[in-house]
Figure 1 (cartoon, rainbow, N blue to C red):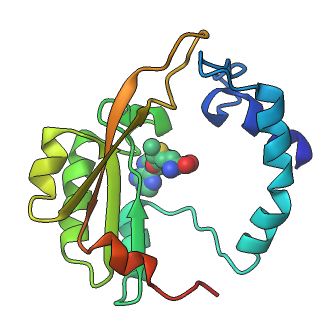
Figure 2: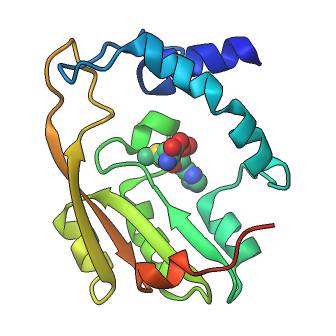
Length: 169
Ligand SMILES: C[S@@+](CC[C@H](N)C(=O)[O-])C[C@H]1O[C@@H](n2cnc3c(N)ncnc32)[C@H](O)[C@@H]1O
């Protein structure tokens, strides 16, 4: 487990097969310090996960099984154009549309993230939309500055409503 965690934290995008070692961009981040900080967080992570059940389900089945008025779905689907990264046909272009159809009829609260794009603006038209700019974390830097990106969150509720949801037990 400790070997897995070490590789996960030090390889590019946590990808141990193809990723190679992560190279810091020009932000001056010290990879040794980042790894040390990651180990300090292990106790908090263990505490947070002690009552958590992790499922490995196709999104449609997960939504079907867990939807209720007390559910919060946070969806971070494959980025447009990288659907094939997660296995052949695990997520196709059509799945962006299917996922939106399902999220539009859930009883629970839903949040979905993606970089800004017109397809998601169309699919989640009428939802609350939040923008934040940052650096493209998944960009495989050779030491240079990572490209800037505009990330968006679309939500069927105000974010302030989500932050006041009860603590998970
Ligand atoms: C942009 S990544 C999200 C990464 C995640 N936020 C994290 O921090 O690990 C897209 C995720 O969608 C998952 N995925 C791909 N096809 C899926 C499907 N049909 N049903 C559920 N999840 C799927 C991938 O395994 C991947 O973890």
